[in-house]
Amino acid sequence: MAARVITVAQQKGGAGKTTLAAHLGVCWAGQGRRVALIDIDPQGSLTTWYRLRNGHGTSAITHCAVSGWRAASEVDRLRRDHDVVVIDSPPHAETEAKIAIRAAELLVVPVQLSPMDLWATRPTLQIAEGERRPWLLVLNRVPPRGSLSDVIRHKIAEQRLPVAGASLGNRTLFASSLMDGMGVTEAAPSSIAAAEIVALADELALRLGLWPAPHHS
Image 1 (cartoon, rainbow, N blue to C red):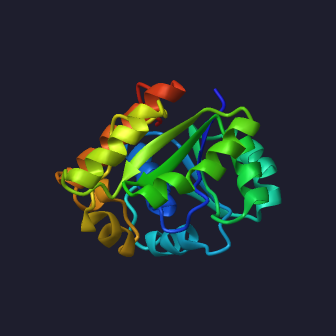
Image 2 (cartoon, rainbow, N blue to C red):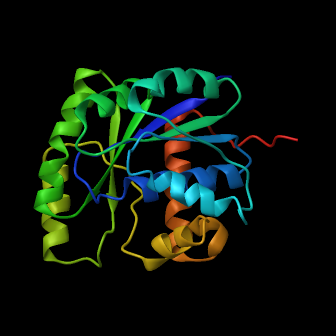
């Protein structure tokens, strides 16, 4: 079966796209899936992480960095030999984001619980709707429950926006594990952060028909 393709996109910078793409990729690879990561963000943060990973990563992941216009052909090449392809798309680049979204079967949009972040998702969601691609908000860097968090959650529910049941807290382990070229499920598998990533990865896998995880020899 050809790979399922997920694009992580958000026109607002600093939303946690690369962090999400890397941790999901590591989690799925650790479950026995063949994972490919495509970095089309000119900043190349995912590529920098992958270079660090080459020294001591514990699960094999395919990686490539390409310009946005080459993403579709690269997806076609990689999906033949993988179970899941994750595309990390650039912010503030509508053309490249559109190409990455068009190539995906599911768009994952990380959003922090602030009014500005919620409003900033609209351009990304408009592209997804224009390309007729399903999308899902993922609440990221969620603080302990408070009045503002509750208000934003209410607004999301009020607008009936598709949102993942699993969310990610504001935890330093997400960043510190990447600094070592790892994912949090490798660096701290018993942590709350790892449990959050596993819950999200499993939820997305179910949506894409990737469950149960295969075990390749």
